[in-house]
Amino acid sequence: GAVVSQHPSRVICKSGTSVKIECRSLDFQATTMFWYRQFPKQSLMLMATSNEGSKATYEQGVEKDKFLINHASLTLSTLTVTSAHPEDSSFYICSAYSGSFNEQFFGPGTRLTVL
Amino acid sequence: GIQVEQSPPDLILQEGANSTLRCNFSDSVNNLQWFHQNPWGQLINLFYIPSGTKQNGRLSATTVATERYSLLYISSSQTTDSGVYFCAVGNDYKLSFGAGTTVTVRA
Image (cartoon, rainbow over all chains, first blue to last red; front, side, top):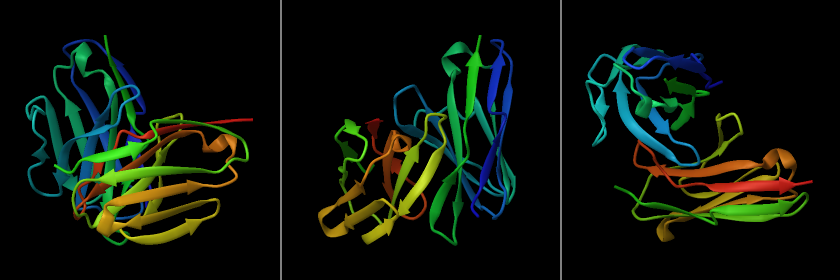
């Protein structure tokens, strides 16, 4: 149990376009999901906390209008990178919190490349 | 926020060797998890261990919450153990990650 999927796994887009990444908890309900960003050979940096049915909470320095988060159901959160630029290229990872295990479970990540 | 320090930053092992990874944290926490990030980027949950000792096969972990550190032991290492090991701590469900320990196991 406690499986999290993420789609797409890889995306290449042109500068100025928007990209949507989906995160799903497949076998449990998650009222809270998280979005992280990871640069090569670095640790995970929390971007925002996504709460079902309410607005996301963003970490300091993360632009709300740039990274739109929607958590419309107990199993789905989406991250939209708006007007993407090359500096947004990164590995984006989502996680879902399981109250049963008191653990976060992670998706496989999405590698975004903006040309 | 809570500071998390992991050591060593890099570890090279010969297959079959044992090793210990350390995680120090700066404040009291009620959540501590160890993860293994494989070469494809997937984080795999190893342990949820805010205190005490747990074992799972060749891996075991100990957290001494009063002294704010946790240890991850890898015994009889295999090449498939290679990757980055992260310690993450926090209160309730929000986690702060350490910088990780990159483990390379050579055949």
